[in-house]
Image (cartoon, rainbow, N blue to C red; front, side):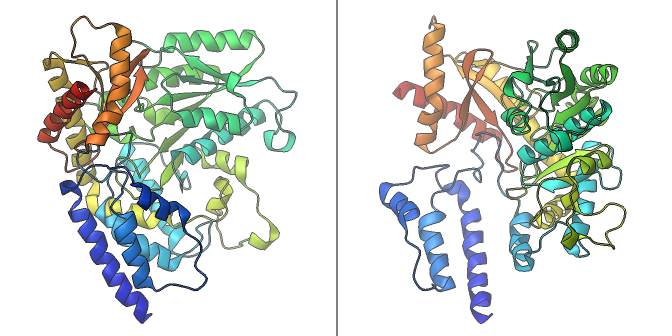
Length: 471
């Protein structure tokens, strides 16, 4: 224990030094060949190494080459910097190293509180047991859609868990082309088939067209298919668009469909007063997936599945072997009965610490700060003659294009904007990513860092211009 005590103190210093100096270093830099060889080519040592030596290796070979998401000018994908409270308690969770499948110990009990807090933050109904923490929203989506699948089967008089899907009418799910890929992966994993994921058209703001949704459901019913779920977005990754959730909820209710909301990134945007009206209807969903490791900055990985009826998830997953029967589990049973994971890490501690450190008002300030900067960036883009805003700014994502050459052909602008993200990243002063939006190559920024300033946005636009000139 003496070695651990000494090395732990040193690890804390290394960690603090790294986080303290992030803003002064390049946002990102490629891993040199020599370092790549070290990272990928090591042999397992024959004898154990000292903890101090491992820390030195981590300091020299790992920490200098981050993804970049800790930097205030990292605007790529949807990856936040780590909240210091979450960083601080991660070693404590590792020291306990429990399985949070269930049982009478701190992990599962604290998870009940954390899930309740998350539901309360986004205004989602929370009956006792109505949710669980997951590795991320991808796993949360699997849980929610598997629950929806089983509920549809039971409503039709059969059991999908017992019988499988063979010989039954195709179960059809509805998403837009802006819906996250995890919805498609979950549908494929659950045996629904990619062909039965129907893409609903979007409007000019990249939101689901509710009238088209209703028509597609009627068409599928006439064709003998079995519509069972519609998945709306509370903040898409491409543009941050929030689907008309209240309208989707009405359609789902009228046809008896499960209403799922993908709020992995954007559900917390409901805390921004200006954006809150866009979220009307989210509280009517049967299930909601969200990611504390996104906007909140909980260290990866921590997602959450919230469920209006926890018994539905239990019906989809509960399988208790004799050696895990717990007579003291109470009415809710174990978390392992509500999803596919049996051994579950102590995700609740870092989430509890992060939320406690921020408080409700701190979470709201973080959301308002980042959404405010995204709107400011949108205004800067609209005011600049060499940029074009591609979508309304609803959350903390801004989608746009660089248009420096008057009279440039659409193909030329696509080629330029497709090449720009890598060129900007290589310069090391800012980091953004690209996408396709409305059939056009686009740039997108996602602002999640509490330390990002308006001056960082000025730097970003100038970096895009400089990178474009060098192409």
